[in-house]
Amino acid sequence: MAMFKALANPIRFQILKFLLTHPGCITGDIVDALPIAQATVSQHLKVMREAGWIVGATEGPAICYELNREAVGWFRDKVGEIF
Image (cartoon, rainbow, N blue to C red):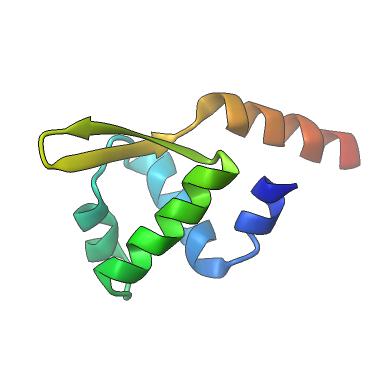
């Protein structure tokens, strides 16, 4: 249920779409693509990570984010059950 709730926010949905085409990006990449502050992006990433949408790997001082493929598969299955 948390995954559905996390995507109810339009900014988080935009982040999800961005990560589909830019896997392994850092927070700064997302900030550059969206018209919101870095702190706000970080807060949205936190919510998405807690909901299971994304995973992050630390590379030096940065965290590289990408979609959690298992979670995306689960979500597709659940949506497929509805339609």
